[in-house]
Length: 144
Image (cartoon, rainbow, N blue to C red; front, side):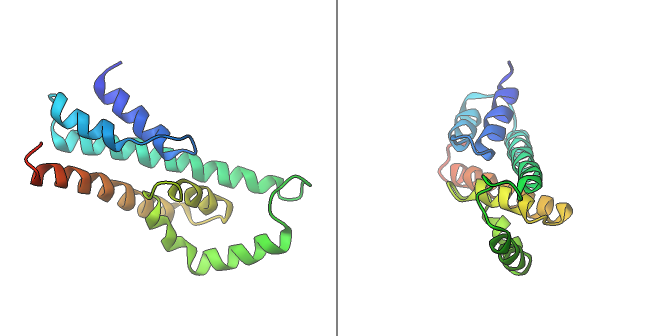
């Protein structure tokens, strides 16, 4: 497995509901690999964005089971949540990069049937800017 493939897979899995972080891998790759910072930014961002797209898809699929007894949200609560999300929650997707809360937000976006193009735009912006900030700090510290 190449180092770029490993970075992609770590970034992908870090964006799913699986525990994990990819920033440490990105930092290590900056100092240990021969790849440009821009290449590392692109690979990590793509992996993390696609992991969030998986979460979004899982959220869309989960909604098919809303009438089952075991579904964790009642019909009226789901309707109320959908109203709130369509008004305010879309912008919460910009917090997709935040540990612990970011991954559930991307699942909720799918459950709430957020327009995919807007989801993809906001998640891409969020995830890429987070990695760019990490790389920017490394550069300011002279570590890249």
